[in-house]
Image (cartoon, rainbow, N blue to C red; front, side, top):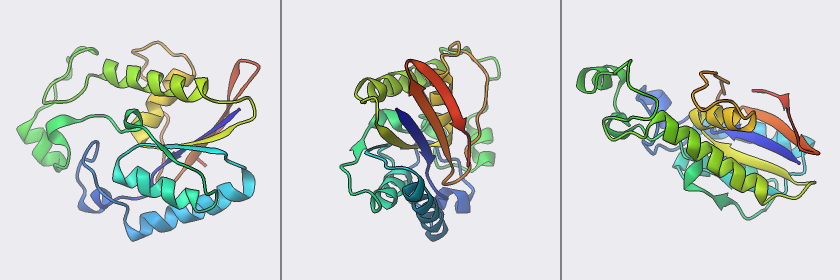
Length: 193
């Protein structure tokens, strides 16, 4: 089985320079072009037979552009959404810092300002990844369309890292990562193409 994790393209929030998270912005025209270029490349290289996507607009639009090359039934999962950043969603960084100052000592399993905890975010990634893998066949090539933060947590879950692992796997706009599972062995084939 192969898993292709695709981050959405540039969104309107990137242009407005606001914190996105659960703020539900659409792709920009440039973001749509980014995704189309990536989708063309993926369609030449992979016979994707399943597409899962976050339900947020920027990911949905990305999945729909990808699907023009495959004509599949996209499965939309709320659990693939980005980190629930509560009250700071849609604010500029300056507004967020002023109105909702960070607590650098906040425990891993605690949250504030209507956010989910880092623990809950990681557990959500584990849950959705386990769901996708357990519903897959050995020869499936599965696209998972999501967000930078969620892709990072999916990496941690895929590699079975400790819950509180502080490791980052950056994802650029409309970039993808290729993983495989063969005979129970999990491999990272490529990262952030």
